[in-house]
Amino acid sequence: MLSLADIHQTFTRNGHPKAILKGIHFQLAAGEIGCLLGPSGCGKTTALRLIAGLETLQTGRIELAGICIADGQQHTPAHERQIGLVFQDYALFPHLSVTENIAFGLAAWPKNERRARIAAMLALVGLSAEADAAPHQLSGGQQQRVALARALAPKPRLLLLDEPFSSLDVELRERLSIEIRDILKSEGITALLVTHDQREAFAMADQIGVMNDGIIQQWAPPHQLYHQPKNRFIADFVGEGVLVPGRVRAAHQVEIELGLLDGVATCDGESCLALGQDALVDVLLRPDDIMHDDASPLLAEVERRAFRGADFLYTLRLPSGQRILALVPSHHDHAIGEAIGIRLMVEHVIAFARPI
Image (tube, rainbow, N blue to C red):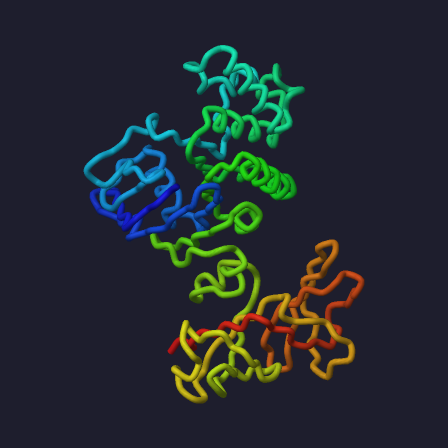
């Protein structure tokens, strides 16, 4: 449904050119929800604006449903692209009711079809009872659902969401991201989300492109990004975890302070022995790789703890001083300074060559 190929974009600021996008490319299948995830200034919003037609593409090619909408020579106007937009500030018309906001893009529809579509959208986002309310009478979550209904009403081929939950509190943000994913899936809508919040990305997206400095570092499903990050930036940016020092012992074996790890998937994408016998590496350990086990001879000291309801996230200090993270069920309530037994339960082992 959506294809970007070799997209380059440069802006000039104070007379100095700055490359914002440096050859990004990805594809999104019909009905999939994609996400561009990355820190502020990485270029993700520029990519979204190029797809929407709000910026003119300089180099590369963008196709929608197999039709070129921009290639550096031609530029299909935004209003002809059949793309829906949901903004972070909702952008609702304050003087119009919920119904009138949703109806905004349906002016050319026959009256009966327009009325039926509005009713369907209100039911879809769970706001039938608020049809006559003004935007200021709604909560933030309700306003965002109105914005979604307005964007979906004209039946766009693609929906773009630009940091749609950034103004909401964390609990509402997570709940609404799941609700909106369910709505999009029920309608079979192809969508692309832009966010810096990985929880939103994980909750909503089928495919995530992690961006940094104008480049998509990796385009993959959330599970793969978390367990098989392509490089150090992704390992550090996605999820929680630490890189602990290790030494290569065999093609798929690395020794760390906690013991010998078998089944090491890759060391920078290659067999670990490609780095050389006894090569120094850094191994990614996630909190769920460390299990609490009172019977284990391996001990670590609780240095910090964060209560998360069902779990504690413990920061543990090993005898060497190395810190690791462990996710432990909250009925194991250990005090700071207490030594607890731990064991490794690592299923996806990724290592990176130690920087020289």
